Image 1 (cartoon, rainbow, N blue to C red):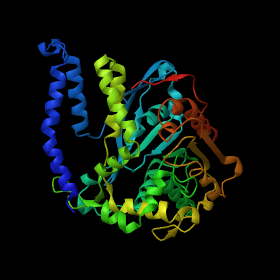
Image 2 (image 1 turned 30 degrees about the horizontal axis):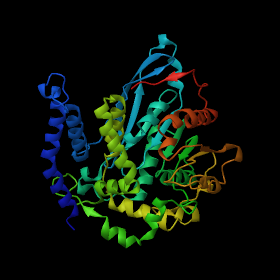
Image 3 (image 1 turned 180 degrees about the vertical axis):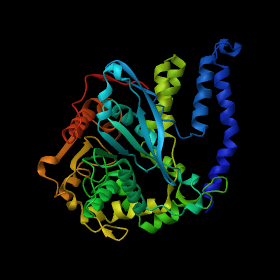
Image 4 (image 1 turned 60 degrees about the horizontal axis):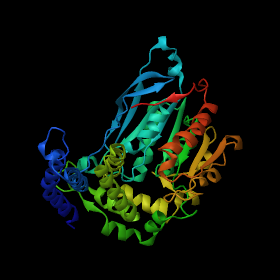
Amino acid sequence: MLLYELHELWRAGLAPYAYWADAGAKMYSAHDSWLAALPGAQRTAAAFELMYRLGKEYEKPEFGIHQIEVDGVPIPVVERVELEQPFCRLLRFKRYHDQADGLARMKDDPTVLVVAPLSGHHATLLRDTVRTLLADHKVYITDWTDARMVPHAQGAFTLDDYVAYVQAFIRHIGAANLHVISVCQPTVPVLAAVSLMAARGEPLPRTMTMMGGPIDTRQSPTAVNNLATRQPLWWFENNVIHSVPANYPGAGRRVYPGFLQHLGFVAMNPERHGMSHWDFYQDLVKGDLESAEAHRRFYDEYNAVLDMPAEYYLDTIRVVFQQHLLPRGLWDVAGERVDPARIRDCALLTVEGELDDISGQGQTRAAHALCTGIPQASHRHLTAEGAGHYGIFSGRRWRTQVYPQVRDFIRAHTNAPAPRGRRTRKA
């Protein structure tokens, strides 16, 4: 099938019009442009910018976390690559502090590994998660690579490989004072990774925090779950899997293209997205620059998508959504049976959103019934009232409802000192 090639041709043809629209928006809005003084210039500029944003190519955003504030004291943050694998980079956000400020004990803060989802969007979707965690923790995150950028010679990437990557990152950081937070899709491979490490007698992280993930999609199935079960596996392989075109390093690699995923995201709520763009146009016309900038920030992230390796995507459809192998106790990873009951010395916190329409209530909480080896006192669950899927890891509800309980749960299972006072964060 030539769908990917046709998409690339269409994007190339659209690019000049997007550049033209961008130039038009600037010419009719720049303070030193005579065109900005013409009648209707503001509406014209707004129309041009809307056209530009609907037609432009969205690249992977930056995390852009350069500084946080702790008790009013600015703390510089440097993003660095800690470990690099063909399909993922392990990033660390290193905080630099001055002992004279009385913040030297930040070095004793617990270490957190945030396992970001490989399900369409980039790891930067968790920017707010990382920024909030940095006030009280040393933070690492998995930064998954767009599959079209991985040379075909690097081979396939499967769900088993995802589990192996998580284990490698845990070993690299060291489990002694490590706490793993998985958001959405990676709750399944993270639980598998820790289960297999427990079965081998390896050191385990002190805690696992699982947020809005599909541990058992038989519980409160959503439209996303139904989509994954409506068709047989061969249908997905024949209809949504395509080869990367020759203009990318991963030429010839079979992937689930990001542009198809994006169409699926938009198709779930087309009216909401249409209204959002109309509101953006109206905000530009009215001069409400703050609301317009909020729209830009959201869609710069939402519209930036990556290609997923075909093997990994099809494994996930089969294992997680169609056959439910993890909750049924039938999942083998690289020939080893995944048995969460083998986990002993690792506390478990699950977090669900009351209004989550991606991972329904009970799907994440199901991890507790599987982890029977964890003492009951080390089990905890939180349902965030009024929170949708994204609200449990980003935005006001994450910062005010969810994060304080995640922070306190981690502190209760570590030797680190108590959390410091009130914090503000600034990027």
